[in-house]
Image (cartoon, rainbow, N blue to C red; front, side, top):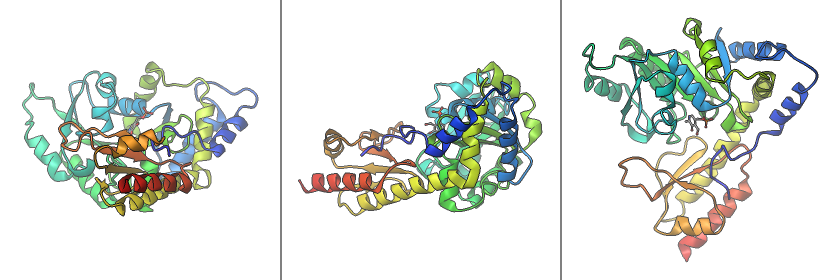
Length: 349
Ligand SMILES: Cc1ncc(COP(=O)(O)O)c(C=O)c1O
């Protein structure tokens, strides 16, 4: 009954096998090997466009480094108030950008709209040289509340952003879950909608440590390799990151893993919803369920060995009650059923 995080899951066997296969003989270091070149090129096929791809080891590094080439140090990044870049990266984006300002924006269920972004821009008027000039709109797909932007919603946001002179960054730590849920092409949820730079996550969805920063406008990647090196994210044995993505992309493994994780969350959410007294806080659209339990129930479930954590949003009256339950590529129906039975027993007690 472990719903702590998709980060708690191990790596998919196909990924480990690929690492083992890559562990033969010698290969040029720092991404100069054939496998890295081949897998980087595969991203252009996957996204149906010529793109520049850089591998890093963590989602935080991907976001911070991507933003660092999208804004000058005196610029501003507009983002959701619950976004990972705002809440959970220990000022990493500020550090990597050399001090750019983050402007957090409120929005239902983790999502921004052109209207909410317009309102934020209007409330922070451009007053050179005083107010930081805006440079980037950062979106998370799927969002931190487990919700998804449709391709049309994304297009509306990107069109608005571009018209306002903003570039669009996407934190895609759970991009796979969004693509799997919407059953659209990765291109439709990225550059075709107007996303300029996508941080494409692998780690939460069965990779060991693999994130890709994808530039759909290659000119924006100009300085990226220097920044990645300087940040300590140019792996010397890059072939092992490439091997993970090789297996991840092959035969749509990434989508199969994400579909399974999403399906487990749907089972969990549906089961909780019919258990009187448990409130599902946000629509369950990917592999995350947000739920409010009656007083004491969450603690009792944890006493029985269930693992999940409170979800805290600054200023939210549900704080302390709302919990996040995350499924992964290797969550089983048995685990979900055992948890639902424990919840039902608790509610009946
Ligand atoms: C939405 C989102 N973005 C980025 C990250 C950062 O990933 P990492 O922990 O690999 O730095 C996370 C991790 O929890 C996340 O949930």
